[in-house]
Image (cartoon, rainbow, N blue to C red):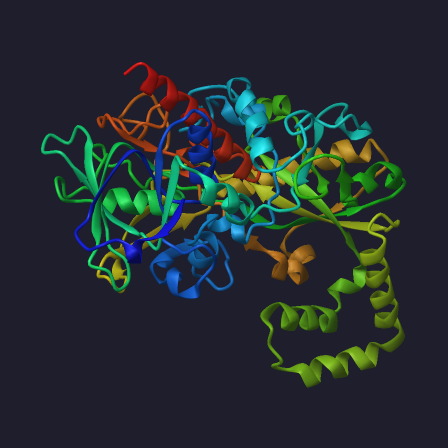
Length: 527
């Protein structure tokens, strides 16, 4: 059932067995899995049934970053879409599992090590693929059988479902459901713990133009995204000025992101027959709602990364033409990216002066759009870089407040020198391997890539903040996602990640939500 909080009488007290905060990828997946087990669920969603800019006001925040972002502020509004389906309304939906080595404890990396292996999560990865409308995930975890995957290199498929907007996809089922109630326009403003801070007694909901109401639930799950999960814990200071679950000052710490930027230009050489896989986005049979597309990501094998002490790096390839370094082309692309006509006359004049050369580039570019697998001489390698978990990268409460007077999130995020060092070492190893296949050289470094800086961006993959660890002095939640010290409060989503790897997090956070559903079912069955 779908209902609107604005129709609920002020001062009402709703009761539920399971209350989930957030109707994004994690929250909806958890609710639908619990419904299959005949559990009754109440979902509180801050936004409406579809995207509304008015709902985004409280999804803002402030930031201090050193990530070469443009603009320099962190893109809170892109990372935190309020509404049924959450940020899946906007995501491209790239899905692949984390590498097996991402789950391992790495002696050279502080804070690494998940409380379980990828093998333990594998059944839930299969369920997650079905939840996202993907075909059976035969290759989501395993390297592709490919000439490049015969040594230190590893190629893996990245699957893109035809429809990722989970709100739109599951809305008919939610409307019919007798066990799931979704309350939209219901932003949770505070969690209220019992006097001994052993459990959550209630949640206070106050939206725009509402007097608000209270929800009481036997089990509460925060599934509102890494930033909002953390903010809700910190803002709930009724029993403790430090917030809920924050006895050891860990809530909000070890936040991670994915840096996505050009890292090298690869000369094709004689290796085109084996490199074309990097440039081809191909359809796969199966899945729900249409064709699933597959592209390829290239990285170092887990064994090599462990041996060399390297953070993870995934590379995706795109056609490149040397004329992309031409100032006129750079200026034109920058204007298109910024949607700005400033300097348009000078740009057009520069294009006119270069005439035939740039016309040939335009034809090359157009042909590449029509035939992505057509041969080329250079490939632009875009890198997804793993960020190491560090306590000073954190979410706190901002001095700025939303229209209801509640603090927004404040993000402090810095990329470490280790990340740059690891990138250079990883590229050196990759170049060595690629040369053995007739490819190369790699052109890299600030001067070689300066003209491609417009492609750099943050991944909008906020992770960490309520990391998992069996020891409450090293993690906010245990291996099941339960907040240490609280009997009935759980966390779902990317905020659980102890480390983030270099893979898009969607598939993994859905798998974690389905794993939590099994735990909650077993816990309920055991009383």
